[in-house]
Length: 135
Image (cartoon, rainbow, N blue to C red):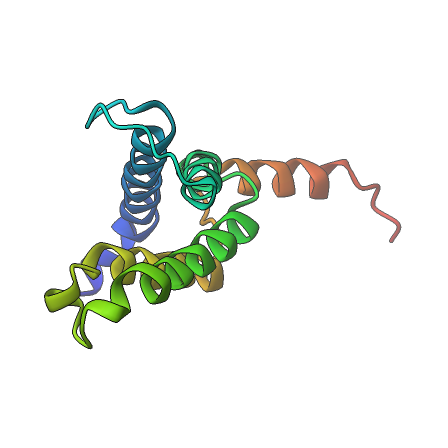
């Protein structure tokens, strides 16, 4: 199935884009009540909402991807243990599946990096071409 290797970068870019935008939607719902009509009142939820919006868009664009993914992954781990874990051991029981999935996806993105189809890759390419050749 080596013929699928040529699609690795575009599919990873789509994964980053979809997951980042979904994450930003969670934040927009907490901050602006865009989807549920309910604005989060707790200060910790407000901070989490802003982290979700900012990190979600950064991950979607592939801009400061590793930093944003690390922050988002950590936030989802904290959210799981603060809000969901007390409801039972298994995520399916305590309704923490989304937090666990986001946590592990963002941890993967942190270790994988932004990929070739990202603003980070464009910047590193232009920075490396701008450096003078000293050979």
